[in-house]
Amino acid sequence: MSERAKGHRLKTWPAPFLAVRLGEKTHEFRKDDRGFATGDTLVLEEWDPQTGRYTGQQEHRRVTYISRGPQFGIPEGYCVMSLEPPCRRCLSSVARLCAMCVGEVAGAAAGATAAAKGAQP
Image: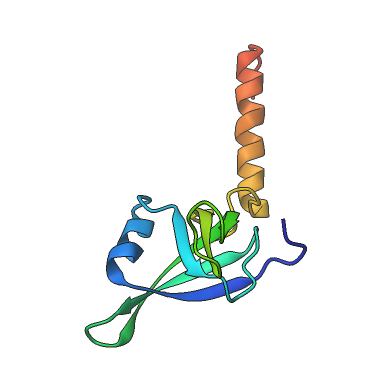
């Protein structure tokens, strides 16, 4: 895990962008020239190659693991990053929920525990 997580804005063509948005694509293959690290956030920005412009659509993903070349068939100077979706409300990582989401999760867990013990939450 990196000491300081960074954000990286990345141009992403429509088909892979949609696959990320739909949750079908949970990895990113990129040239390893930005100092990518576990914990970083990728801001994938949809790029339309026909118009040569960004569409304004974005997807945020947190890097959870990185495989770097030259190993596992990955060329030297490239990497494959495993990605996780952010919290829908706060765009923070699922593993690092915002305070509001942490409170909701804790409240739901306390209620479930109390119900399992036969007490009222």
